[in-house]
Length: 356
Image (cartoon, rainbow, N blue to C red; front, side, top):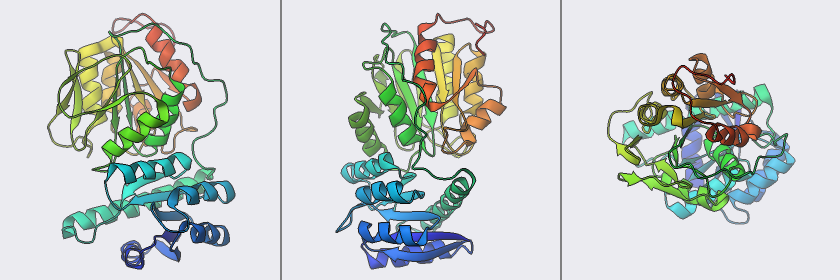
């Protein structure tokens, strides 16, 4: 049985969430709280497996509550945002920065039955996954501390090169940490696919830009790519590159994902080949494995996050199993590896430098 703590200032919301979650016999709500202070107290007393928490609450909000929980009784926390307003979404991601596992929209009981059922099942599935991860690995407020100093060296501008990254579950805080480690301005353009709930992309972009200082641009239409700017896939749209531009793409989901890392990586492989560096970060599923292999076959370096520093090892493991990784790297060393890969002269496909 997975024991849950529900935290929301609305009794109605708590009732809806309880009914939604306890429809699964593996989930049990052991307590409720109507503000962050109560949440911290009940988390310490009851030691639930997962906490489901609102962002905006009286007495103590979700951000401070997450900080205290991570300091006193580290527990997986899922933050639920009532709206997709960028301001509230950014507050949710600040809680993620403090140690929460993920930020998701609240299930909306007024939505159509198929939509509501799909969102409810997704939330239940994520709760089970996070509880298993915490039991297997322990839970210590998230991403491991770096073990070596981060490379802050600058390299000359490389507008002919491209860095392509993909992440899913656990990605926002992992990307925040990685971008914090990378120099500003960054020497080449960056393209990014982050699997995220619909409506959260702009809030995520604003939060990430403020946290790291790197300009983040959501790709709504074709745009010429400039060194130092991060081009982020928009809600429900694939992202590709063509003739030096980041280009949104229509099309069905790939690996049940839209945007898909495979779509991005395959596009980058065709356009940039050995002038690209691909990075596969934490996430569920296997999106990105096929595209990462296309990158490697085109002569690109492909760096894959290691299991120890990944929140969820699905996407990295799939890329490794596919034979796509040229190097498996801990998060603390990822920035250095990216800079070293960009600073090397590109090798034609089939030619290696001995670092694979």
